[in-house]
Image (cartoon, rainbow, N blue to C red; front, side, top):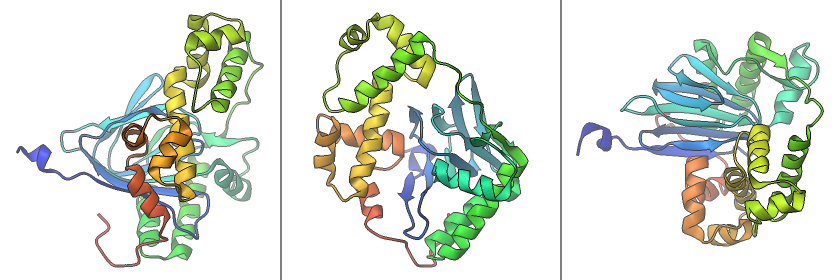
Length: 287
């Protein structure tokens, strides 16, 4: 067994009961690669060791220690190790509403807040992101919430902007939006691309191009991501993984496990177990 294979991967994806609207992930990944996907809320990531390559529309950024990755809602991205040793990091997933509330209280930004840059050199804020995790792991919700808000306010003041308003939809964009709505409604039994295009009065390739231009993903990849999002909601509510798989349209639990783990970074079972407890109140090493 070589040195890379001997490095253990681990991850914890969880919520603290007293920090609503915020998910936390800290992990070490070596072989794991996140496929292209998006989030309803924001992503703030701070690498502690190694390098994470984050693949965005039109560019790949290299996240190293001392940098902060900031991804706006619904921006498609993928990620993988940028070095054979992989990377360890702490990531925060706050809801869009939570960031909007902090922006309204601490900045003069008007409209929908977001970030103009995807990665910045900001070692102090990177340490704050890690400190949010440390405080939450030790059951200190007051410290975790305070440090989280300080970190976000700092990022908004230094790098925030009002996101541009969406322009009037073209015919292709309107068809893509309708296709997305139909897929949401038929999550467990979606139509084929040809059937979907026929319903919308367009061609399969025209719909494929329009959907990818609008959402950054082809319909089948978007559907997989949406199924995983719905699966998370069911798991949050305590639904068993096997029942969840059927409810969101996966063929069986292994099918759910595979896609869920690739996108979320932990298995459905591990995710559900973390939802069943509040925090680990101990003094074990953070990394």
